Length: 383
Length: 123
Image: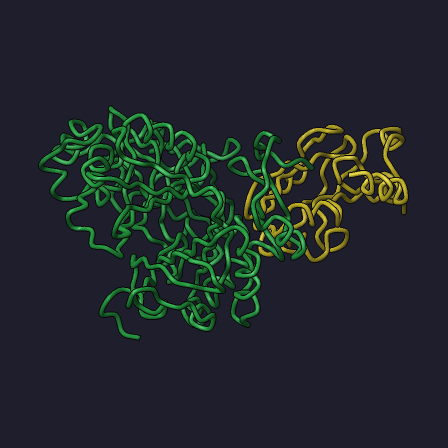
């Protein structure tokens, strides 16, 4: 037996919680240049725990950046298709780093932190992102890489209850953690340290991401896992959770070869920017918003039990009409699911297609995403 | 009956000219939760070291090789509905296929149980 998954290069660094993961029985694998926990007790159990309780994920490989200086908002708007005039202090928004042709260099979160902006970018792309931003931001704008901060994600229906037990102290009349709503972002004092918390995540569940100084990361992870509802969860379940939530993964479901419009991420191009342009790739994005695209990222349900994975070609009868970009067994669906690009004429929900796996055709049906409904804690939602 | 092991973590239990093949406890532990198994059909002709079956965990697909050459007499029908049998009973009810051995001399290079255990300890 041999695992056919391609391995990442072996040259890897360790993250602040490395020993903490190993002590809890994590299986560590190279990912995005770091040794990361892929699983503890098992991906299925960890996936289901996160959907029913609360899972703690170490996502310290991701890049945390600060951008400050006079004119920072305008400088950021020159590189991202975001409208910062509608992003209030204490609020976070999804955006996209685009190349001159409108291809996706990364997807990221931008927070208006009052006197600066706070960004979270993907781990595998952070060094390229930093180089790109240094090249494109004016010299009087300061870009700081918060390389000494860990990032923990607490996700699941019990996440708010568990985090509320830790006694995070609001700063300057800010909200309590349990009163934050989806995409709020605020600073707290915990155990003498400043921590930045956003109510967001990558599982489709309610939850939080907590930026904490590296020397406090173990204490925070311990304090969270002392709660009966919280268990550490590996990257394996993070991937199956995000796939069910219909959340695309950078480097797989979008890349420099795809535009955000093809990837179904038009919401990342804010309204004012659609009309005004003035961001990298604007010409192509505006044209695609008006005229549509030749291919589209869609979700699929898969007949039978055999997983359909990244790279599988998609057929309509004899014609190859697309390719799978993410796929696998979906624990909360109880069946395999996938996402991939297809020619737009085949992208309507219900369209019957086939994927080819090991020479065999597997029936697929185009499905509206998410596969599992999002349960974000939105403003005005019932408690 | 004698049980042999390969360096690719298959086991083969030999009974006269026929044998049963599966993956080891060590292998299932490495794979994690198994969600799909594709076993060969009756009559399929396998060669030693060649592709025989596919086992898929949540994370990845892995090939399973035949420890010897031969002709498949049965794939384990229970794995279609319950692939997790490979996790719970890899060296028992979670067997993959049975075959008629073409050349029993091919068993010579395989490890016995203590040899396989020593091999796993080096990994």
